[in-house]
Image 1 (cartoon, one colour):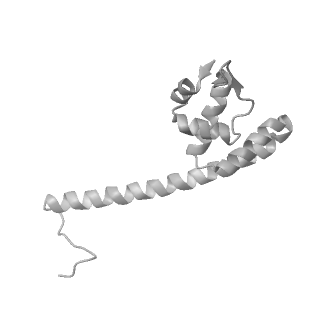
Image 2 (image 1 turned 90 degrees about the horizontal axis):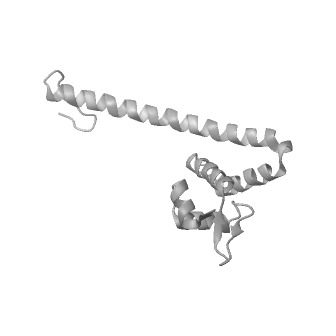
Image 3 (image 1 turned 90 degrees about the vertical axis):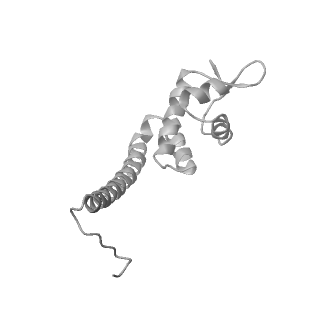
Length: 130
């Protein structure tokens, strides 16, 4: 069993974020020690790791709650869970595409600036008229 502090460290989450997840009901069946402090087992840690991933993927807290309820419904909800994850995956693919476009833009500007500095290309600007 792990304390809140140990668990938050293990999953790379702040103590406050873990407490928020607990208070929001995102971690079902939270156990408590003899002093009424929350404690977590390996299954909880695995679930929290999954929540952390979903949050990093951009899933909203409300969608995470829907996903949790589907998980709690068991095997009968697998198709719905797959659909949710597929939708989130599509969002990520679009973000990756946007990021790659941004990297390409930066790389092309860096190459242009390098060529100008090396005298290979004459400098021009879309903002300054000569």
